[in-house]
Image (cartoon, rainbow, N blue to C red):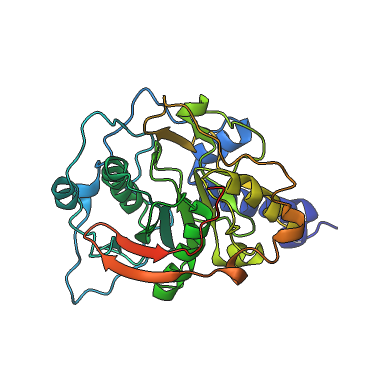
Length: 342
């Protein structure tokens, strides 16, 4: 006696397989995506055909006030991939403002045509690098807008002529930024680095701190060493607080990155990295010699013993000013005592 079709095990198996294939096609973005995934060959950007960084921004337009804004698409249609990055001509502030009409006072941007799915704070520890800043702002604003993010750019700088303390300034930036918004992601960004591919999304990994600058031209698009966490990194506020932020006791920039890599492990997390074909960055003045005054012996900074007491929970500073410029928010602080060795 034959079973009805709906009760036949072979027919039910066929239905399940067909349903799974249909879901896979939707998830992969069509049949081509499925075959590309099954073949195991990831789509690598063609860097021989880069685009101007302002490509597609002319498509942005504000919706009429009476229209309810929809959520932005999960994958932005404005992305172009590899970008042309050159530091030969210095853009003026007026030019940058003119090219970014939807950027609001304080460097705040919200997509004019949709509700952003992510909110990211871009935090830059800054020390009188005006030319670098102009190049950075020229490229980073359109880069972020094509990703349909809601974002604000913060510059944090210390007063006086004491040695630069990047780590402490970033701690201050995080504390001040979180007063403005419940940010989904904190991007800790060197001012002299510009991303070369807008598929390098400035959003956080849900579970672990993410190192964004996995391929910098200065290092021949390779990591300088395995635990490198410098340049650009992305952490949720929860990640940042879980590892007690950056140490406040590193004078001169650089060494805090090694400390942070250790803190991440001590806090029970790990570093995830943007794939190297996406995490490409160009460094301004990349031919200059790298000074490493921050590489000190482990005995001076015993992270395993100090990380729970040196960081966000021990942060002390005096806020001197908080000013909204057309393209960024500037935070000026007195970071207190500068030790004699600096």
